Image (cartoon, rainbow, N blue to C red; front, side, top):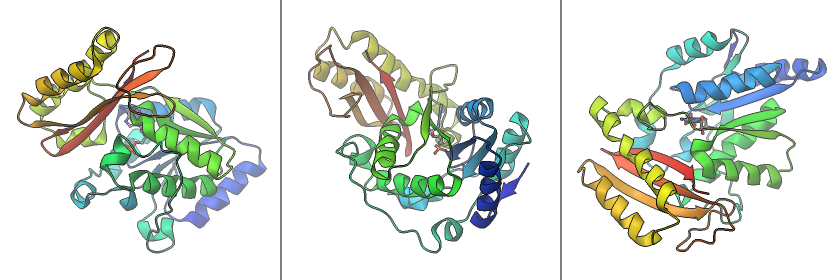
Length: 282
Ligand code: AMP
């Protein structure tokens, strides 16, 4: 298994792969890998001749320095998990200077309003930061396929827009959200929760599932209000947002027109740990 830290070494290997006609799959991550990441990596292994996993906690996509500082790190464990899938997978672990050629510079994009609601509203410049790093990774790896999780649905739409803006030829492969038995979406941030907080956080997916069952029959505002109230009965839980949005434009909806497709999006702070999730409603 190759663990590469320098861009110039990646470029050499990528050039060889392209010359020998091999297809390249890229799975960008921030590490502290869990089964959600591993399903992305497995899908890449099944589809592509060469698979790269990048591990980099990108400072410019964090709007909150504490969130950045406490983001969990487990490189040794990550490498072993990837090895358990295949020793042929390559891992790219750059430091900040290497990936950004010095200090990171945020690029500002026009995401056609996809970034003004939900995560974009509560995390200033988060998606410009995500797009800046993904753009760098795409030009370094020139992948045929790049893998993202549906758990970060807004991110997927942003990357699709980035690819249009930068006219990059790459397939985006979207993998379904992997969950704990109790429904909680797997996330590296779950490592920061106590066992009881993890158990209690099952209410997040229960709430989304309840919305899916009932959104057709109830008034949206009142159903949202009652869900938020029931989540916040637990004093450790604070709902940052619960919204129903158009699946394509991410415009927030107060009323439903059943000819369109909608998703519900939620962000809950559990003892200062931000957990997000979403569900397709129809
Ligand atoms: P992160 O390391 O959080 O940046 O995530 C790296 C990739 O893994 C992103 O495309 C995420 O959407 C995806 N991912 C994270 N959690 C899950 C999950 N529970 N199920 C599926 N994919 C996930």
